Length: 162
Figure 1: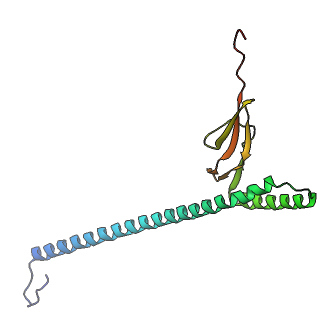
Figure 2 (figure 1 turned 45 degrees about the horizontal axis):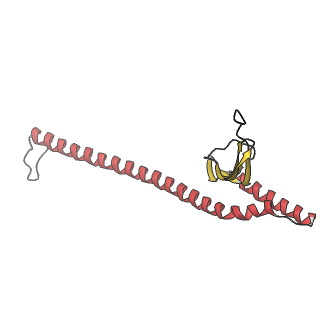
Figure 3 (figure 1 turned 180 degrees about the horizontal axis):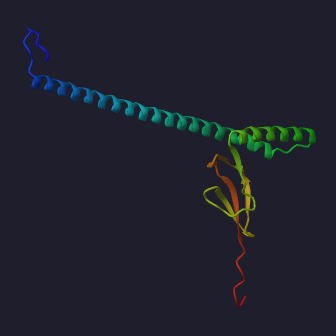
């Protein structure tokens, strides 16, 4: 049996009550610690996701600004074949570095029009294939810039009686 501060023995019920009170406080503190840990882990996950989104957004913006310069390579026309060859080598190196980072052109020419990947900039009658006007680009599985395409629709069949 324990004693009080003045030396008198404490009854067993009071000791048990104090012990229960301390156990309840310990459980409360343990619950608070668990919640704080869960909140901190959630915070870390949120910061990780936000950082990835900021990085992705910055990369997307940078690549979008770079693409018009890359378009210039495919539009270049020179009389000097050596200069044209040099530009093609530079263009291939650019596209190699982009591919290494998960950025790839969209294959549009001759395909069926898909508004998820293509931006229609004109319609002509004729066949059924697309004509690519400006190359589109993907980053991973997302469209960075849709291909600008001219849609070629089939000629209307002659009407009966014509």
